[in-house]
Amino acid sequence: MRMLEQIFKNEPVEDVITVFALNSGVASLDIMFGQYNPGAKKDGSFLKEYARLFEEGVLLRGGDGTVVKGSKWKEPKFLSDRKYLGES
Image (cartoon, rainbow, N blue to C red; front, side, top):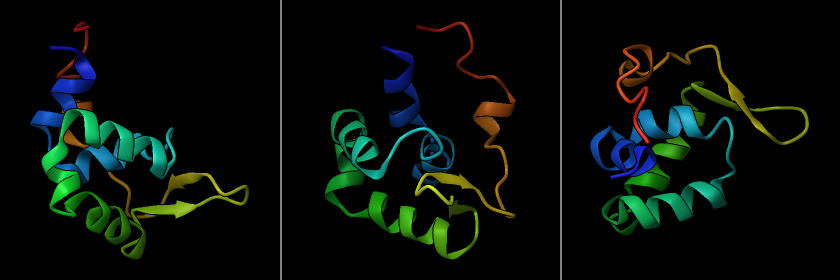
């Protein structure tokens, strides 16, 4: 199983969005959730979490429309633990 697939399938939706929204737009995330975690897309939890993270200040819109870290952004455990490092 590829690293992205493992992350999207095994990690909480909130954590996945917290990391990948910084480099991907909502359309790209939608595609990745559709491919790797269709349940989160189908039940609406992906879009609910995406909106909630903005509401709570974890994510913010940058001046150029990109997504940036908000004041409440924290590195998810899987990232700080380097859980998927070295996997392909």
